[in-house]
Every structure is written in structure tokens, then in C-alpha cells.
View (tube, one colour):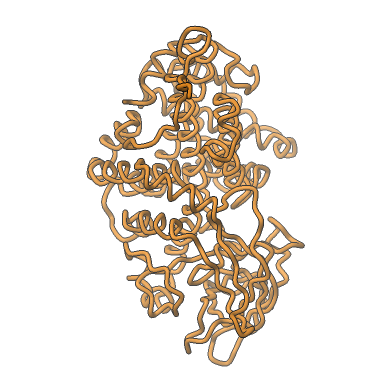
Amino acid sequence: MATADNLVDEWVGHNLLATDPALLAALRQAAPQAVEPLTRYGAELGSPDTAQWARDANRHGPQLRQLDARGRRIDLIDFHPSWHALLALYRRQGLVGDVFATDTAGRWTAFAAGCYLHGQVEAGSLCPATMTQAAIPVLARQPELFAPLREQFFSRVHDPREAPLANKASIWVGMGMTEKQGGSDLRRVTTHATAQADGSYAITGHKWFFSAPSSDAHLVLARTEAGPTCFWLPRYTPDGARNAIQVLRLKDKLGNRSNCSSEVEFHGAWARRVGDEGRGIPTLIEMAGYTRLNCVIGSAALLRAGLVQALHNARERHAFGRALAEQPLMQTVLADLALESEAAMRLMLRLARGFEQGEAAWQRLMTPAAKLWVCKRAIECTGEAMELLGGNGYVEDGVLARLYREAPVNSIWEGSGNVMALDVLRAVAREPDVALDLLAGFAASPDAPVRAEATHLQRLLTGDPAALESQARRVAQGLVLCAQAVLMREEASEAAADAFIATRFNGDGRLLGTQPVPQSARLLADALAG
């Protein structure tokens, strides 16, 4: 048999943190206490065993069992063991609750880095973790709900058992908001809640998307006489009976195959109110701030994962007498991907720091802008990375096809692009001084392209309000590019900052690889250690 050469296996068996010089340097600066544990985590995540868990959990997705052998309704969901191994890995790292359980400086940076590392290997398991984390600050304001479950929220032990909340070592929380007639317009919710004599509510209706139906409890939107209201709806009632939730089917999704979403009906399901009646949407908007941050982190992780696989392949594979990574056009495209990845990573860390420090500009203005931009860039860039591997990238045996199928979910979940752009404008309208102060900082950049863009945005935001809505995406894009340019100048290498600013502000379009990237070879050498 002839020996095959010039074949490149996927990049696996490496420590994900130790091989990421930019992230490692950022952690040493902002969260030095996290470097050692996240280095260990990076080794676990980069191992062949974890890569196999990711493949298995996505190849053998969840299966719904509606009935038992005698026809009783059970609505249980069976997962491949690899799914539970991945959840246990994430939970053991403290990435669900530690940001709220401690007040350690840099904790949000450490969380973002850990979530980012995990998302490079398996993205579906981030969904229940994100929703559980986002539920903590909302529920914490109601001690009667939160206090009995505090230890389960902050636990580092994954408990996959089907049991009432009080019997669990840890819990996962899902969300049920979207209905088929409303979509993103949550005001059109028709599921209704009826107050009971004991202070609980009976929920009747449906949800078109009920995320992670295997979760131990869900936060659900239903209508009372006062309007849309948020409710805590556990899988088991306080007396230990199964709650009246029927899973009609699991959604057959494009990506996010390891995780499950479902369509459900409520038949007088037992629930407790969260927040005031009629104030469910503001309650959920607070949660959305956290989940949108995680969408940015997850998309940045996909950008990094695609870059790493493409760069590794280009370094090792030869064509026309030399390595692909030594060929000028390939260098330009790869360097563009490297810039996109690093800028997304630095932006996600800055957003996380904004959450830790309670900065309105980064929490309420930049988070929706970043979600719009980074999530959309992940779709384009994972496709480019897949193309750089050719046919080997397109087949389901490899990881690139999974990354590409995974990328759109973060753009859609928790508000699609137009919703995010309009949320940016709403944030500007509510706190115009915050937006203008942020732009003033960008306008002080030493780089002329950044100053020009910031000045243009200032004119847009102080101009005719009637003309602004149609420019909402333009505003969000400009905010993100200015923020990324400033962060790259402050924190990245001079070569990376120069290249990013030189290629992001000239208005020539977004096609990767169309402009020479200064010092491409240097950028590629810096992007992936080892």
C-alpha cells in the first residue's frame, strides 16, 4: 500500500491557554489568580478525550422519551454520556456561579476566559450554563426562592439525576419565552397565569422554543391581568409530583446539536412569580444582558477555533512547492482571521470587565453592539476557515463543519441583528451622555481612522432622530470597530494594532483577504504558540 503524505490531522492534544499568547497575557494582567487553574483547564479541554466527547455529544444528540413502557407520560430526555462529561467539566471549573459567589477582582475576566476556552471545543454545553448563570442575579432578589437553592446554584458538581430541586446537588435553569405567534415580540405572549389561593400560579399555554427542557427549572413568561410576567417553573412541584409540562417534540436544529430545544405545552403547571406582575419583560431584559455577553464569548470562541484549525493546516500542508502558510494570499487571509479573532477576544474581555465594574457604557450599550457584530463575524469567518481546508473542512468527520453550523445560533438567540441594533439606539436614547462620553474617548485615539469614525458616530447620534433607526446597524458596527481598535492599540502588539486599524476603516467591504495585511507572517507567528 502506498504511503500517504502531505496529510494534516486536526489540531488536537494541545493546551488551549498555553498556545494562545494574547489571551494568556491578558489574563496575567487582569486576573493573575486565574492563570494556573485555567492553564489546567486548557489542558483538559485540549485533550483528545475531550475532543472525542464533543464529537460524540454532537453526533449522538438528545432523544425524547415521551412515554414509559406502560404508556405513562414521562417526557424524559436521554443524552449521550459525553454531554454529561462536558457539563461536569464546565461546572467543576466554577464557571456557572463563581462570578456571583465571590467578589474577587478579575473574576469576570477569569469567567470569560474559561467560557471562551470551553466554547472552542464544544458550544452546545454553554447554553444551559449561560441560562443558569443569568438566572442567579434575578432570583437572588427574591430570598424565598433563591435561599433554598443557593448551594445548588453555586455547586461545582454536575448532578444529572431526574429529581425534585431539594434533592439535587446542583441545578440547571432553562428559559421559555418565545411563542409561535410572537417571536421576538414578547408582548404578544398568550400563555397565561392564574393566581392560586396559596400564592402560586397555574400556567397554561405553549412555548415554541423552550430551551434545555431537561433543566431542573425554567424561567417562563406568561400573561396575568397586569401584563407579561416572569415565573419560576420547576420540573417537579413542591409535593414531589411531576409538573404539568408536556414536551411535544425536540427541535431539529441546524447546529447546537448536543443541546436540546423543544416545543412544550403547560396544562396548569405549578409556578411562582418572579418580580412584579406585568414587569416580566424588564426582568428578562436584565437576564438578557448576561446571556448576550455569553453569546459574544461563544462567538469569539468559534472564531478562535476556526482560526487555529485553519492556521495549523496551512502550516503543515504543502502545495506548489511550499507550505500554504508561506504563500502571500493565504497569509493575507489567515492574518485577517487572526486579527478578527484577537479583536473579538479583547472586546469580550472588556465587556466582562464592564459587568464586574457595573459600567453602563459596556453593559447596556456595547454588549448589544458586540453581540450583533461578533456573532455575525463568526458566521463569515468559520465559513472562511472551513474553505481554507477545502473538502476536508466540509465533511462532518471534521470539526470545521460543526463550527460553521454552530455559528448562526448566537446571532439568533437572545435577539437577532436588528433587535440588537435597535437596543443600541434605545440605550443611546435612555443615557445619551453615556454614549457621547464613550465616543469622546474613542475620538481621542491617536489613530486618525478611529477619530474619524468616532466623529461620524457623534454626528449621527446628535442628528435627526427620525433618520437614525435606518442607520442602527451602521451605528453598532462603528461602535464595535472603534472599541476594538482602541483595545488593540492599548493591549495588543504594535503590529496587530497597526494591521487591524489599517484594514477595518477604509469602507472597501468586508471580504476577508482583499487588503494586504501589514506584517502578516509576524501576526501568524504570534497567533498560535507551539
